[in-house]
Amino acid sequence: MNAKGAKKRIALLGMHLESNAFAPVCGEESFRGLCYLTGGDILADLKKDNPIQPAEISGFVDGMDRAGVPWQPVPILVTCAEPSGPCEQGFLDATLGEMRRRLADAGPLDGVYFSAHGGMTATVSDDPDGELLEMARSVIGPGVPLVATLDLHANISGTMVEQADVLISYITNPHVDQYQRAQEAARVMAEMFEGMKPEAAFIRLPIVAPTVTMLTAQGPYADLINYGQQAKGDAIVNVSVLGGFAFSDLAKNGLAVIVTARGDLAAARALAADIAGRAWDMRQRFQKPLTSLDDAVAEAVGNGEDETRPALILADVADNPGGGGGGNTTWILSALHDAGAEGVLLGVFFDPALAGEAHQRGQGASFDATFNGGGETEYSKKLKAPAAVLALSDGECVGRRGLWAGRALSLGPAALLDLDGRIKVVVVSNRKQCADPVFFEMFGLDIAEARTVVVKSRGHFRAGFDEFFDDGRVIEVDAPGLTSPVLSRFDFKNLPRPVFPLDPDAQWAGPEWD
Image (cartoon, rainbow, N blue to C red; front, top):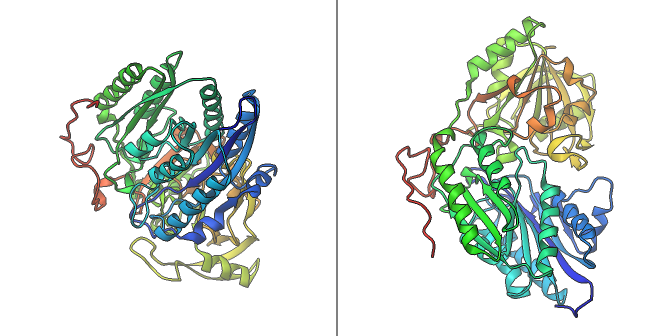
């Protein structure tokens, strides 16, 4: 540590990936294509009007600036990729090594802030997030504060809890509080500089909840989050209730409760046990029916025929790029096209070859479009339909609402295709979930004029599109895909069985404290 009175030197690190075990491996190009910054480039990006790095980094920096603690940011490495499959082990190892080297070269540090997702796996390692925190701790030693923020879909290991002094997860889903949680991390760091000694209690429950049951506006997860936040006070510094990410398929999967107290382990354990018990008692609520594809299509057809009906938004929850989905299933698109649905906007469909062909043909061209013409997989089936190129874009935009508000985004070469004058489809070259209305608006579309909007997103679209559709006009569609909330359709290999709701008779006898 530095001499008393000197500026606190705090390292900034980050690595984000949500890994779906059933999706293709995520390689180095995915990270470098989205965000890979080192050293001074991290601070330079923060000065931009629309940074590319996770909002947590700017949140922590701003939080420390406001905390009244003289400090100096020490930027190390920040990287992230779109949700995908397991991280390629070679890239993970290289990133761990580069972070370790830069941390060691940075000299004496007074603290480390780590921005992580918490749901990453690798082709060999099953706990990369634990390894990242363990690496940081091995460099800085036991007496230096290490605070990390996590997505609420993080899968928590004992290593993660042991290596970090405080783990702070998001409390909103859709995620719109990354900046605020990082500011909270800064306040906690400042409090540790004043002598606060955090004590954490951790419980993992045999509950692997479907993603659609983990919204925080209402429902069982919202009740747990709210209860925990209301319990914070003089004794409790943080309460994190993490729903986890089922598709990681890990032994550490399971709804987790982490309570951090100010020097009072007994208080942390009592509250953690209370919250966990409430979660277990309400486990039956972590189930939710979806709307069948036929019924959803019938609603869309009816909307096209009767303009007095309220417009609807259909969520293709099973093909969510935000959970590792390919963003290119055609079940809903094909069914709407075959049924003659009118006034439909669909986005965003990931098909670089089709977007490239549209650019080659040019605006105004008509042609027979083949979706997934580059090859089929189990889920990405081909679909052929007459199409007209209504508009073209380079795909560069800035998020307007919700998850990506104010963030620089790149969809790559993109095109707006019109299928038979009835369905307009936004086709993109970079896989991204449709969580922001700007993906339609960049083509001059008025969402308010659509009769039915279809988004490839699980839940983040709610924060982006809620100015057009309240919860009563959202339909979560049951269709095939890599992120289907119907967990019984997946061949899990590593989940801790028995686990609810896959195993209705799963049991839990309470925490087993050491």
